[in-house]
Length: 209
Image (cartoon, rainbow, N blue to C red; front, side):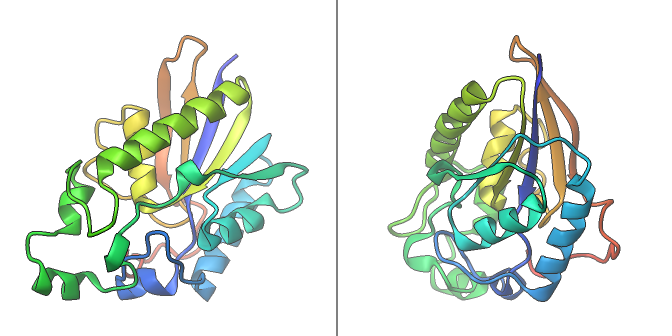
């Protein structure tokens, strides 16, 4: 029996709008972030979900709690799904960092650079390693089930790398969009749809990132 995974990113936060690096830090969901999480919750209402895994960081956990709605499912916290650590750069605006340290460019990480890291932070290679360990465990524990994963922008890029998405370096998942992946018993992966926002009542381009 195939295993079905639904992936989403936490709702919009204040720091998303301000283009501040969140990493392991946190900024609360904006009102728009909450409203769009409720729109995704409505979409998920009639979709079978057996378990929800979330990053323990509050913005993701809050989103997961909204998405659970009336479903009788467990929300499990998984440290392997946390956002990339940006070390001493967390909470700072990217344009300020670029002026101080031009060689550190978040776009390089988004495009697949696996070695660039903020001071005292992680690189993408390390994120991919811990995401692989987490997903190997999650899938092994819930074979044949329907799993919802709530994570973060760069964590989701690592997840899509895990699922061998050829476009992984070309896009970043929008907040509370939905991606559906099916994995056959033999491990073959099918990306049914990704970064889908058709559940939003307002399709305006998101602010910040």
